[in-house]
Length: 117
Image 1 (spheres, rainbow, N blue to C red):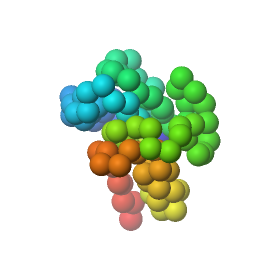
Image 2 (image 1 turned 180 degrees about the vertical axis):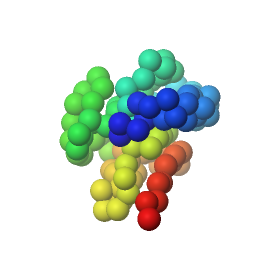
Image 3 (image 1 turned 90 degrees about the vertical axis):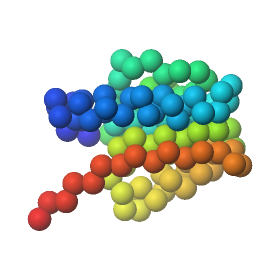
Image 4 (image 1 turned 90 degrees about the horizontal axis):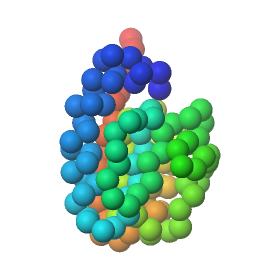
């Protein structure tokens, strides 16, 4: 995820900050999960857990591989921000996010795909 530390990567992440904050505020008073490609100085509003990619796992207030350190149906909003490369690992992450998402929760998936020919 080193590209996101470049000027172009930081500009892309900065351009998404307002829409992510809006998604995290949609269910006021309920918890959220934000999976991001890098650590950020951006304040995370409200009650939630923000984790960033670290090797094959996650880092932040907690460090983990998989599964996520959350009980079933505990978060109302999940934002996956450029945090997976897709394939079976990406599908497993989406399944894991669905596990922690409350019924009638909201999923906001943001992804960046680069094709190299």
